[in-house]
Amino acid sequence: MKVFSPLFSRLFSPLFCSLAAIAATAAALVTGASAALAETFGQPTPWQMGMQTPVTPVGDEIYSFNTILFWITTAIAVFVMVLLGVIIVRYNARANPVPSRTTHNTFLEVCWTIVPVLILVVIAVPSFRLLFLELDVPKPDLTIKATGKQWLWSYSYPDNGNFEFDSTVVADKDLKPGQPRLLTVDNELVVPVNKVVHVLVTGADVIHSFAVPSFGIRIDAVPGRINDTWFKATREGMYYGQCSELCGVDHAFMPIAVHVVSEDEFTKWAADAKQKYAADDQAPPTALAAATPAQR
Image 1 (cartoon, rainbow, N blue to C red):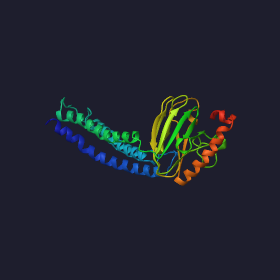
Image 2 (cartoon, one colour; image 1 turned 30 degrees about the vertical axis):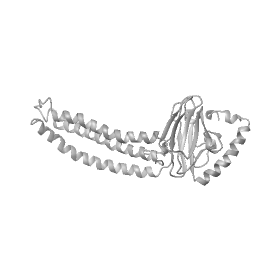
Image 3 (cartoon, rainbow, N blue to C red; image 1 turned 90 degrees about the vertical axis):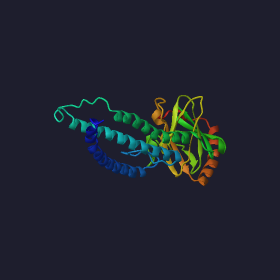
Image 4 (cartoon, rainbow, N blue to C red; image 1 turned 90 degrees about the horizontal axis):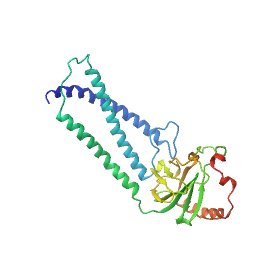
């Protein structure tokens, strides 16, 4: 231990000073990234850093957990890089011609065993809490069934008249100003704000994946199986997602658009949609509806 003490002192005295300086720089970068993050809503933006702004309880927890992981991984990476730098500078053959013959150190060996375990415990506690929050569906105010098909989404509202409609991507030539490419759809999924929405997810042909980053949800749509997830959007607006499973040639043309509206607006929309889509069910399919996005 006496042999190791001078080595320990020489290594770590400049290390902590460097860590403090780098931590301050990282904090400034994170603050700037957070400011940029606050300006984005519901969809990715060019040169965006970080996650999309969360608007659900699950999304908030994911964002907080990601922040914890960021600081842990940053601290580990900085520690290792600075330690390697100090060793290279102070203990190369020119600066240290007589190498130390220390082969074992109980304190150091205990540290590099216990510290990683403690880090994993710190990560595990919020991780288990987040998993429980994602999987424990509270009492729903609204249930929706989302079915992934090649290559579109079908949405069913069993609580509001049991109507169903397809949601397909809008071709580039039909986009209106302000509508994002490959994210805009002809029929959005409409839900009320501040309500627990229970989403039943399945696939009609191959495995798809229902994902909306701002809601913090992503779950596979598996043929012959019902998976479920939930969200509670706390802010009105339009939120976009995409199929996040490689499902086929038109995988990139399966966007998800969720329109979060007030409760009164949702009630009116549901009444109109019930009549509209009931009438659409009686109409023969058109050639456009039968075509894939790549053919439109």
